[in-house]
Image (cartoon, rainbow, N blue to C red):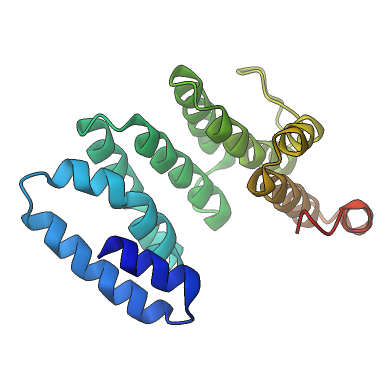
Length: 196
């Protein structure tokens, strides 16, 4: 059912139906004796994608820590790290947390992704962390943070379109938030259309 719900989201315009099917999936998971493992596997499709599209982001944010916990209980560190990343990124985008505290959370998230050798997640998290640092004017002394240019080169070398898009969007967001409109225009002109 979860695959059906996610497929409806990806391949049809009926997001509402996909969301309703996803809610049924969640109810079925609650009845399963293997619910921690199932919650872990379903968290990214159901919560990070469908809930985040349909519900206000503030109501979705509160679910990420429990998704992290269920993933760790099930031994699914990949889903756990992704849940932590979504938690940090969602709180950043919603503006609901002081940037200083959020900076510490991003560092912990990157360190956890490094611990489990999840390089793609590390780079994706770094795109958000770079935007946070750009907006706050803070300096990173905690981790080996890659710059946007370095992340762009990694995305190009690995042909990772999602990473390239995340670099572009976070870079643009940082410039918008700081009202650096000349930089926004310049970045828009210099970005290949294959990135966006």
